[in-house]
Amino acid sequence: MEFLQVCPIHKSKQFILECCDLINSEWPRSKAARLQSLYMSSDKFPTSLVLILDEQQVVGHVKLSEIKLGGDELMIETMIIHREHRGKGWGKLLMEEAEEYAQRSGFQTIYVILIFNLESNIQGDGTIKLMDHNTSWLQIKA
Ligand SMILES: CC(C)(COP(=O)(O)OP(=O)(O)OC[C@H]1O[C@@H](n2cnc3c(N)ncnc32)[C@H](O)[C@@H]1OP(=O)(O)O)[C@@H](O)C(=O)NCCC(=O)NCCS
Image (cartoon, rainbow, N blue to C red; front, side, top):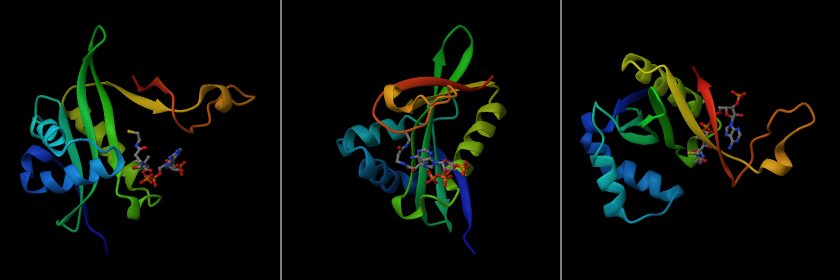
């Protein structure tokens, strides 16, 4: 039975290096810059949440950052699930936990960056089929 926990990285600093490697496995960047970004995590945002498997392995990460669009809003970015564990519902779980974390912190609106090809992914009924490579915004909770 797998045991999953979500916690802020600044309260579980022993996982920072592993988290850095996980994120860099998807979006390569200098380790120093990535670590600096992770060390900025705090209760006051930005906050990096990590998904921990069996109290020992970092299998997911998501970052919540404060943005100002006329009110208090958060943005979700750098969402990643370890390649070996994708398609098991863990991404959804981490997103739900991130939403709850935001709500507990007093935020009601969360934005995500979606990556999709606008031209080829608008479907006949007007919905968007998610694919890759252009950036857009979607308000998912208000
Ligand atoms: C995107 C990602 C976080 C999804 O994590 P996951 O654990 O595999 O996702 P889940 O198994 O929880 O799937 C949740 C839902 O998202 C859908 N989904 C998963 N990956 C998807 C993708 N790449 N495109 C579109 N939908 C996707 C699933 O079909 C599922 O839908 P359902 O609830 O209707 O069945 C993971 O594939 C990943 O880390 N990708 C690389 C990094 C990335 O692209 N991050 C997003 C931009 S920051």
